[in-house]
Every structure is written in structure tokens, then in C-alpha cells.
Amino acid sequence: MLNAVGDIIHASCSCPAGSGPSCTCKPTAALCYALEEVFVLPEDLPSCTDKLEAWNKPRQIKLAAVPVFDIEFT
Image 1 (cartoon, rainbow, N blue to C red):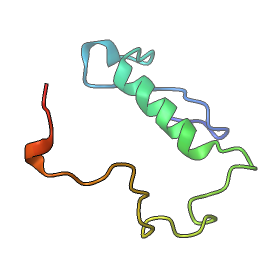
Image 2: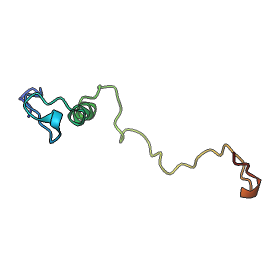
Image 3: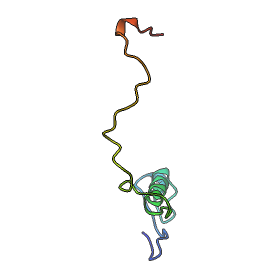
Image 4: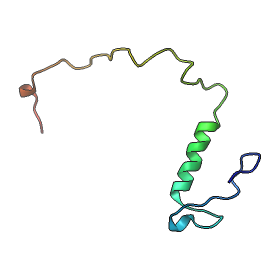
């Protein structure tokens, strides 16, 4: 549960360490860090829609194609 400013005032989880108002479990801590990363962004950080399309650009080929029989597996 959060207050009006966004501070956590109560948390609980179904694991043994997460019971009670002072929830001290890893899943709750991970959730808090994830929420902070999503909602507390620096102003100078561009959003994903500020960039040009990058998903349809071909990759740069770094290795030449060779037959599978020529590859040495160790």
C-alpha cells in the first residue's frame, strides 16, 4: 500500500518472510525496484518511441557462412 507521495506504508507476500507490515522478502524487494525503474525516470532519458525504428534493420554479418560439417565442436 502506498501513501499520497508514493512511499510504501504496508506490504505483504504469501512467502514466510513476507507476512506482516514489515515484509522483508526478495519478491517484494524485486517488485519495488522494478516499479521504481518504470516510474522514476530521469528527464533526459528518451522513451522508446523517441527513437527511430530499429527492429527491421538487418544485422551486420560478422562470420562467414560455412557448412556444418566444417565446424569443429569441442
